[in-house]
Image (cartoon, rainbow, N blue to C red):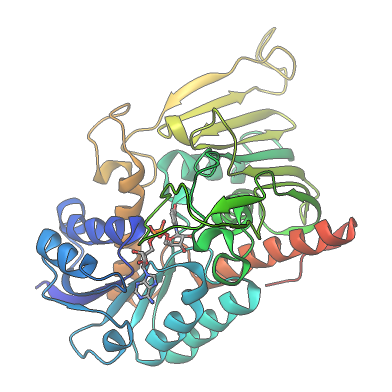
Length: 394
Ligand code: NAI
C-alpha cells in the first residue's frame, strides 16, 4: 500500500524547480518506497511565477504568501528553496506547524540561523533534510567508504576546490546573493558550505582553520525587475557587493589530517570545477564533479606487490562507478552510463521521504548544516583577525 504525502515548494527559482522535478521522479527510481509525494502547492512572491509552475508541474494550488503553506492541512512536507535570509523564518515556522522540511543549504545566514531551524525541527519531532547534494554522488560515497576502510592508508591531507564563474560577469545583477542581510557571506554560503560538508563527510570533524577572503568585483548594477538564478543587469544603479567572492582556507582535522579548502564565484574559465583530492600514506582518491561518475584511485600494497606499485610512481586508475556504488543502481544498469546533477536531487528527495516513511534520518540533516555553518563562521572570524581559530563543536 502506497501512502500519499502532500508536499509544498516555497520559492520557485532554480532550486524550486529542481526539488519539484525530484519529487516527481522519486516514484520512477524508487518504486518500493511506499510513500508517493503529491504536489499540493507552490508559494512564490513574484507575480505569475507560482501559477506558471503549477501549470507546468501540476501543483494543485498556488500561494503568494508562504505563511499560507504553514496553515495548509493538505501539506505534510515542505521544500524551502527561497533565498538564504528567509530560511530561518520559514524553516522554524514550518517545523512548528508540524511539517517535515527539506531545506536548501546553507540554511540561513549564519550558525545561529541553522541552529534555530535544527532546534525547531528536533522540538517538533519532524524530519529535516538539507541540500548538500554533492555528498549524494555515488562516486563520493565510494570514496568515503574507501577512505574509511583504510584503502589509502592513514589520510594525511585533502584539497577541496569549488571554482565557478557564475558571478564572473561584471554585469551579473546585484541580487540578494551579494547582500550581507539577505545572502549572508557570499561564496562561503554558496559554495564553501558544500566544501565544508564534503570535507566533514569524507574525513570527519574540522578542528581549527585559518582563512583569507576577498571581494574582486566590488560593485554591480541593481536589477530593474524580478530575478531568478544569475540574472544580468546593465544600466541599473550601481551598488556595493557586500560579501565574499573568494575564500581560501587551511584546515586541521580532529584526525590530525591537514587540508585546503578554496572557493571562488568569479573564476573566469571555471564552470562548476568542484572536487577533491584526498591523500593517504598508501594512496589517494580524486573526484571532479564535472566527471562525477568517475574516481581517480591510486592504491598500492605498501610496496609489497612488486616494483612500481607502492608509494612512489604508484599508478592512478580511473574507476567508473556502477550499480554497486551508492544509489547508482536506482538510475543506470551499468557503469559509465552518466548520472547528472538533477539525479543527486532525486537521491536527496528519496532520502528525505524515506526518513519520513521509516521514522529515522537518511542523508544530510540539519545537524550537518549546523556543522557546515560553524566552519563558515570560523572562516569569517579568521579572515577578520588573521589568526587560526577553533571550530566550535556543533
Ligand atoms: P533563485 O533566486 O533562482 O530562486 C529563489 C526564488 O525564491 C525566486 O523565484 C524568488 O522570487 C523566490 N522568493 C523570494 N522571496 C520569496 C518569498 N518571500 N516567498 C516566496 N518566494 C520567494 O535562487 P536559487 O538559486 O534557486 O537558490 C535558492 C536557495 O537554494 C538558496 O538558499 C541557495 O543557496 C540554494 N542553492 C542550492 C544549490 C545546491 O547545489 N544545493 C544550488 C543553487 C542554489
